[in-house]
Length: 138
Image 1 (spheres, rainbow, N blue to C red):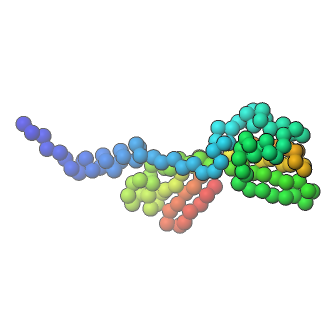
Image 2: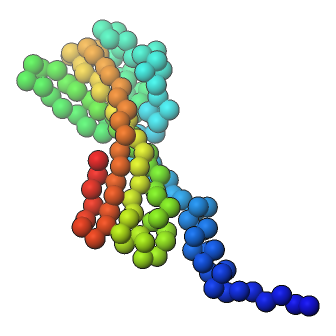
């Protein structure tokens, strides 16, 4: 006896099951701080000791450079990691609910002249949602 495939059931299983296995991950920014922790950054950067050249050798070029009114120079390194929602891959459903969530790390280094004055690492959650109404990044 030969079994026939129930195509409707197969298609329904594929539509529901495939997104569980096909989820995407997006990384953006400076990979040198992807696995950074407060402790690992403190071990690499010493306030009043570490120079600009040493910071650049460890972390590369900053994403942003600012100058403060007080004469300090601020460098920022940013890394964002997001995982896309499974609903992004379901036809029609993705029109009403798509996006992803993850985290953003920012390493801020403030220099007084050529030497680090202060540094800080922060990690915050990020979420991006998109639908008929537009996109929202939180």
